[in-house]
Figure (cartoon, each protein chain N blue to C red):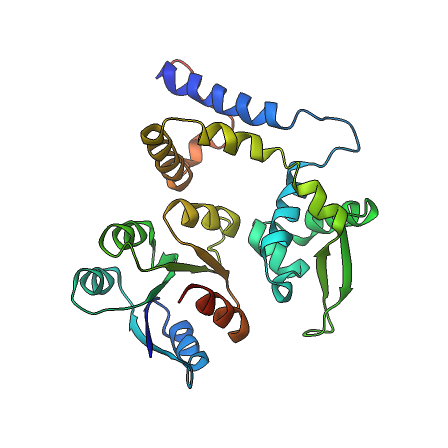
Length: 147
Length: 122
């Protein structure tokens, strides 16, 4: 249905607007996910391996993102006392400060401003949308907008 | 003695968690299937916290988390998951929060991490 496509456009637009800073110094969405993980996760689980597993990514892009965050002073790597083969990732003070400006807080605030019944319905619907299996034939950018 | 309802279809994991909680203040009731979990949630057995694996076979446990929230609103839920390859743990964590789980533990976790979570909610 056309309204499905229209809803998809609105979702995409809301998310895109959230990441308005496009300069090379802006923190990218993957980097925000990493900062959030390090903020809420016990130190023992703040390793590259656990982080990549959490994000569902291979090590390559996670290593590059961590490297950028370390260079910007938002994350530091220290020796892992539990496992000599890996390092512990830790948020710096600047990393904690950066999270206060996490752009996703803007979307959360918009959701929070909905009337309570709408808000409850919305979060449950988003859960359903996330859990509903993706049809393989729609994963190749062949969405039929006339349906 | 506090009581834990542990819902996990992998005996290897549930046995490990039971061992972690040996000699602690917690006794563990283990159920391995969604049907057994539903019976336990709807039944008379009291428990102080529910520890729920996200993937039970090919099914997710959002229905069980919803049932826990409806039938046992005073029992906090802890969601555990190691991912399944198709649905990231990041997404699992978010789905768990929407479903009422107040804590999330990513597998593999250590005894200290489990105890920290349990002690914070019971």
